[in-house]
Length: 363
Ligand code: SF4
Ligand code: SF4
Image 1 (cartoon, rainbow, N blue to C red):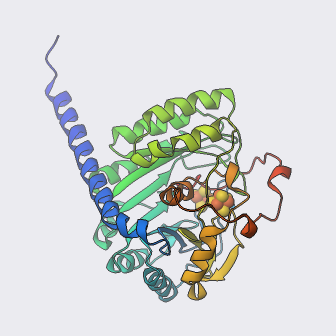
Image 2 (cartoon, rainbow, N blue to C red):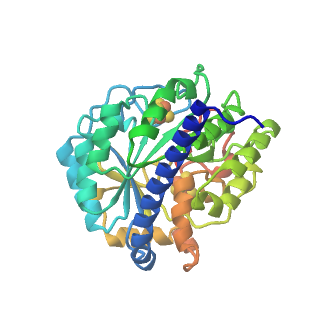
C-alpha cells in the first residue's frame, strides 16, 4: 500500500482536530445540562425549555413556513430582557432564541449575554445565512452554548433556499471558529423534492464534526405527514447516522411517526416547554399558538401546574421533537387528567394532509 502523501496526512489531522474540538464543545453542553438536570427533574414547576421569539421577520421565504413575515421589527431589547428575567424567576433551565430569523436582531448578542448571566443555557435556531466570522466570534464572546441550523436541500429550489451548497462557507467558519456546539437538522417528508439530500446534508454535518438530526415534516398544526417508500429508505439511513443521546432515546417516537402510527405520550407543553411569541404571550408550541395565550408577566407556577396535567388531543400525531424530548423527563409521573383535556380548534381526525408544513420540525 503506498504511503499517504503529506497533504493527505495534513487533511486527516485537520479533520481529526475538528472532530475532537466539536466533541469537547458537545461535552461542555451535556455537562451543563447534566448539572441542571436533577433540580429540573425534581421540581415540576420549572420550565425546562423555552422558545423565545426575538423577531418575527425573516430574510428568507421558505414555501412551507408559517412562522415568519417580512415586515416585523425586532422585539426591543428592554422587553426581551424583562422576559428573560421572568423566565429566570420561573426557574427555566434553557432558552432557545428563535424567529423568524434571530440573527436579524441587531442586539442579539446582548440577549444571549443576559440569558447566560442568569445562568440559563442559551441556544439559537437560525437559517445560518447571516453568519460571518465576526458574528461567530461575537456569539462566542456573548456565551452562546449551542446553535441549530436546518438545511432543507443540497441545491436551492422554489420551496427553500436553505441549501447545503449556499451554506457551505458558513459551516466551514463554524467548524473553525465557533466555541459553541453546532447541530444540523435535515428533514424528510412531504414537500421535500429530493429526499436523498437529507442524507448528503447529514453526512456533511458529520464530516465537519457537528451533531446531526432528522425531523419529519409536519403540517401547519404540528401534525404528521406519513412517509412514502423512498422517503422511508432515506429516513432509515439517516437514523443509522444520527447521533445524540436524545435522538436515540426518542427514536421510537420518530419511528412510529415515519410509519404513520400514533404515539402514546404526555405532552407537557405549557408547563415544561413554553413558546413565548414576539408579543410576550405564552403558547403551547409554535403550531398551537393561541393556547393558552397568557402574557408571560402573568404566567405563574399555577399555570405550569395546570398545564402539566392537561392532555393535548394533538399529541398522538405530533412531530415536534423538542417538546417530545422535554416531555420524556416526566413520562413516569401521574397520568394527565382527561377532565382537563384540551382540543385544538380543528378536530385532529378531520385534518387533510396539508402540503404546507411548518418550520424546521423544531428540534
Ligand atoms: S423556515 Fe426558517 S428560514 Fe425559512 S422562512 Fe421560516 S423562519 Fe425563515
Ligand atoms: S402535542 Fe404538544 S407540542 Fe405537539 S402540537 Fe400539540 S401542543 Fe404542540
